[in-house]
Length: 212
Image 1 (cartoon, rainbow, N blue to C red):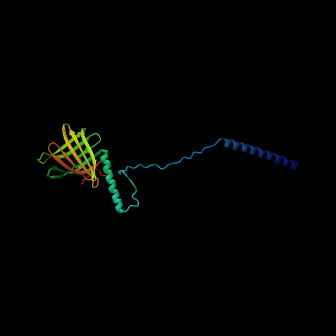
Image 2 (tube, rainbow, N blue to C red; image 1 turned 120 degrees about the horizontal axis):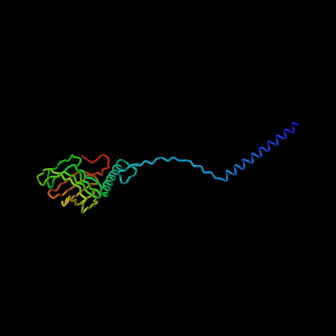
Image 3 (cartoon, helix red, strand yellow; image 1 turned 180 degrees about the vertical axis):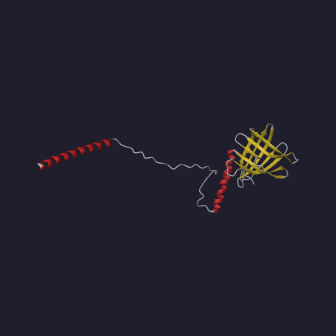
């Protein structure tokens, strides 16, 4: 009797195992027939954007001190080149002199400048009145710029133009050294010729307008 029950239980177990195997096989086939794609999110490192004031940039790694100084001088000259070619800069004077042979005067007020922009010029400069050496001031904007010419020379740049305030013509001659950064503006007015010495600024360079 017991042997019969054991045989019956064995048959039932085998049948259950066979059914389970068949079910498992069907599940695997069904899974293989539908390809699954797993999407793994990847977090990228954020991009840092920095503003550069140099035109060309290369690594200073491997340079000795002399080579590094020469490299910085080249970057400075390239910055002046880019500034003149942009036609968007301001000249800030440190001194003024009436020509010929006038008194040299220092300029400490930071609001005096000669600005050249793409579509206009802004003139705000101290000046002498005729040959009396009494001081006056030029203060006007002009949309009328004629005969503009920028020449790239061995030592730097020479920029000339005629700027009109109404019917009055002012002739500007600006010389900029790409070695020292010194800028010399000679301004011919209807009554006097003025010479200003200073430097250029583009409104973005660190440190503000250059002053002595």
